[in-house]
Length: 382
Image: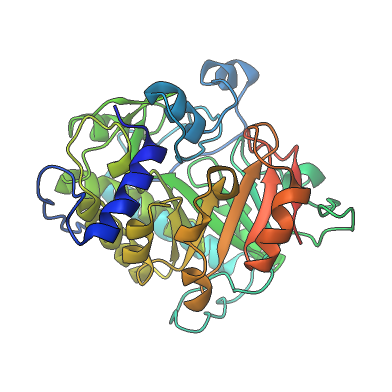
């Protein structure tokens, strides 16, 4: 099987030869948005036993897929998380009322901010700016607001200078309650909701619904996850419920992991154009709920260019390590859209002293983390 990195190179060559030269087998299937009721969760820090049950080797999905298919290839990270209780069997009407209550709590809690000012070109929603964005990415466990490590305060830039405290937090949408989002808003911060849109995790509350749609191959390195057939309307409906959950909790934006599964060994014949259609449908739904939408990785140049007008910013992993930054530079800067770039201290990539000068010159908001995304390592480039 062709390695994902090699496929990126092949697709770039296909673009040079002309449109359609490297299109995958099968035509794109129509993907229609379906509005569904929000899911609700009760979140809390997992016990060590529960956390250990779902713990895998600390490596990125990028490197796990590389190991599986025998080559160098861009992919994505999912931190190592366990199950969160779900209100199973709750009537739909009650779920809707809970969702409204969560949203109201996030917006009206004492000390919470009022409506966030939208950025230019994004009516009614916040988007990260193209200047310096101080951000924290913590997915390993529910965010601890009292932990300096979780909050990313007291860190230093790659030059050793004190780093500004984060004003944007990217955290797990299931594991974190609306009260955490509201608390961050009360500080003047913005919050991004991490969800998976291209795979089903067997510890999530909606897994049975996703399983009923027919799942694909296991995600390499993550045996508790299987790829989704994104061409099915039922899948769109369930993932839109995840997006609605983010909105009900008051999140400002969505980070959609595995939004580029056409380049992965899914077990389905997913085409690039089908993936563009799927992501466009989900982005439109997020926008209708007042949230911005990211491109997560998606560093095949043709794919990123097709979604440039759809997404509000990009969050990419290891483009300096895998030489894929051209998918975002200079196009995202010219479109006034931020690029949040990640390198990992424990994945064999370049050190901050090597990649930070280039990242700063390209106006990427780059940070070195460790692959666990547990708050232990955070070295911003600026």
